[in-house]
Length: 336
Ligand SMILES: [Zn+2]
Image 1 (tube, protein in one colour):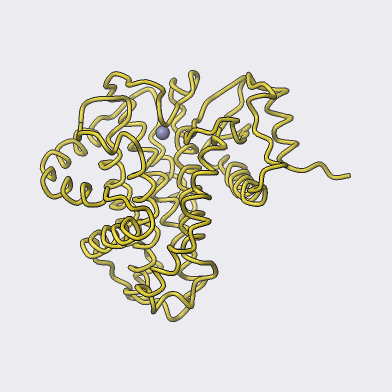
Image 2 (spheres, rainbow, N blue to C red):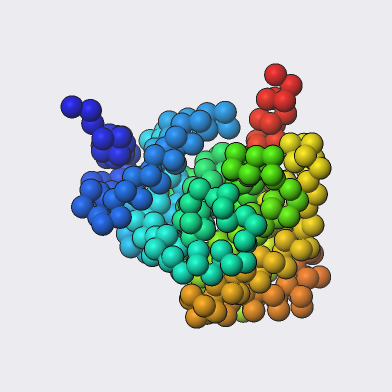
């Protein structure tokens, strides 16, 4: 009998790394088994291809913990990504199972809806899980010394400001943003074919960016005061701003889209992403975080730009930037 790939993976985790069997989440009896399994298959496939970024001996599993968290680390020479079972369940309950999202947005995106292969809430759910996976993968690509003690996405207590950690996080978000942008482009070309135009491309980006925005706005740290040079992680609102700009910028530069004369208006995409998110917040989640986000962006723009250029200008010597590794790899492929 063929062994189930997840069982095989977790066996290897327990045999070869510091993790014990109790720490591994077995989704066999979960009502969400199918979705767990799909996330695992996607992530494992992408992790196996990450040798091109210098990441080998990769293992990925769901950590048995119902809080919404993820981490990347090294153990006994293995590169490990742990997605908490709570993260998968949160995204299922807040996106995958929320058909209302599709019902509300199909009236807004009337010109795009018939091209999509899945309901909008399902696409948003997939993108959110993929985003987290690529963010963790970026930490493995960086090969920083922090991997030895495991990089937790949401630390258990407030930690001191650490410029290197901020840099690692912003870089991991940018790497993930580019990976996602490249998926969005593939999706657009596949499903819209010759009908793809600037408006449809912008709509697609807005839909995907709204799901990231919804996810980040749910962070507890998003509800507090804005900060810059504090905590181990950058403020979620700054992170999401960087992610949306990275996705849009990548697609604006894309030769494949330029070939089709597709031009993207980043200001419009940004405005519409907030509008779509606000609509979902009001009608589905009864929250108002996107209002704060908009206010924050308008009043704090100068500070944010200063902060981002400081982080970008900081060139660490003891780890690689995932974004540089991505660029080197793309260059190599274009030459070949
Ligand atoms: Zn991180």
